[in-house]
Image 1: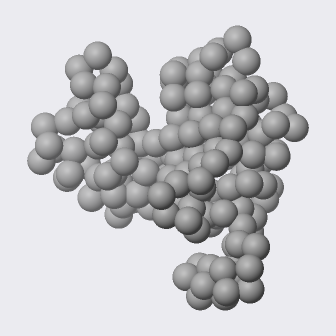
Image 2: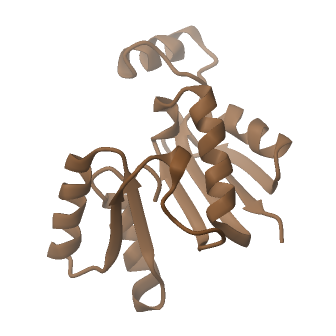
Image 3: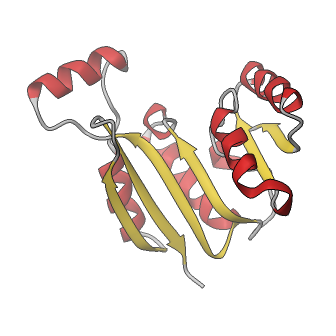
Length: 161
């Protein structure tokens, strides 16, 4: 879980894989990782939680079957997004899946006004832009879609085998 924050999605992933899988979370904020560690301990979950950044993931090549990121990419400038996607590609196993959930670029004036207010100045790009970037890069099977919360969408992709 890249940009795991306080670990809610990371804990959900751990519940999903149970004892058969291993889950890791990374966030640049030590305070967030501290909260995630407390939550993990309270849930008796074994999760590898680390302070770190997307553009320099502290994991070996081909380690993960799945990489998740939720509501984090919109915080990053384009060059860090690109460096982060390259790092995600590196740590995914061949055939591994990437799933990003984030804000969509609004198409209406009211949508832009709301997103600008919520995100204190606007959106660097939307999840739709990430889909285009992934499709132009080395990722395959790129899909983008909507979620039940209209301002948010998803993109999924695979690392080629």
